[in-house]
Image 1 (spheres, helix red, strand yellow):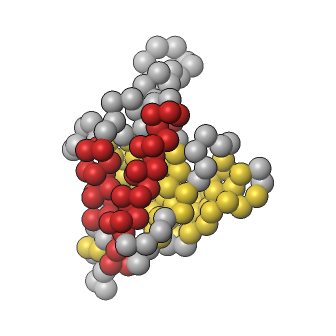
Image 2 (cartoon, rainbow, N blue to C red):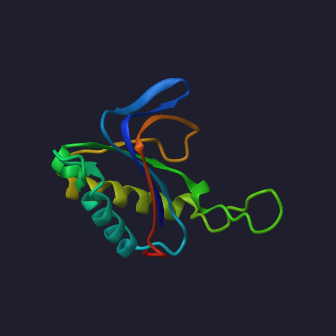
Length: 150
């Protein structure tokens, strides 16, 4: 499972030109799921997301996590995070999980994040053509990959 975690001042998802979800300060998380992903991947990533210290304390140091700032989270599925660009110019998405595998894992990722955060997250709509807007704060953008735990 691969995440792009972006600290934002605000973020929104629209579907068919209609606002679907909106948050103020917090994280926009793009989630890519592959066939081999399991509950262990979800547990590791959710724990990382909710304890990632990337928010400034009173001295301006990145010492606070999202729970300490009462920030919000917007979670958006994005199968293109598993694009392979090894051959040619047309990406292959063969590693991205099919909906019958990805949807339950995506929903579990949301519920586990909500449990650790202690409040509801906003989400996009799985499989929809979405327009995502954000104001990246910092900018702080971190890539997390449960198969490559650096």
